[in-house]
Image 1 (tube, one colour):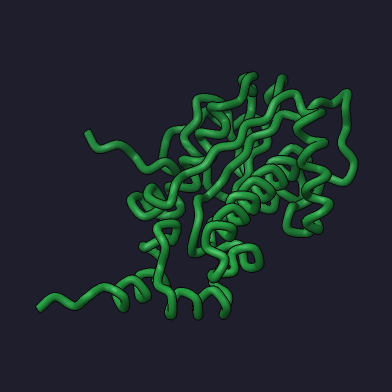
Image 2 (tube, helix red, strand yellow):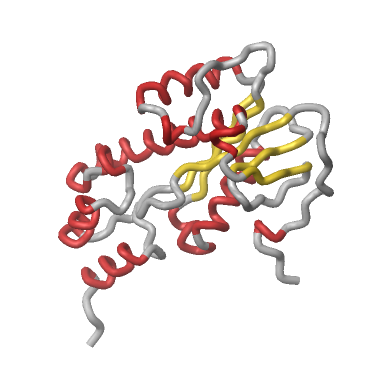
Length: 212
């Protein structure tokens, strides 16, 4: 039998509240042309509050780095996971994002009673889950997850930059900026590029020899 896509999987019946541990989940890297998509799940500790949690995109890089360390130190538990470029190309970016989210939740040391996921789609989980549009700005646990995912992915792209400095990954982090598109057209795509994304596919075709 053909399995349902991750976002069509059955969820536990929605209730107004679920007493117990609540995990926040968010991702980073759906839009870029290169690198994996990274997801994080965080269960915060009410007895050790963290000041300044917010949507990672609204924070400076320095503030994100500092909060990253504080979240790891104070949260009850955290889990960071990813879906590879190969998985993105095979199952599409939405399904890969949900896969990374599911892996992050499954990696938690403690099992939550409820999972709050940023956005409007849910991964397949064996616990109660709820999608929260704009959750990275509304729910502290989701904000914490967005920070962990963003910092982790940015670090991965900095490593990619060290290996391929001509592409400028330290500046655009894989997004389709004019600088990145110029590098793609002149240097060609790397294995870290997502071939299922149109600009990369176009560059890939231009550097491959035309069959006779």
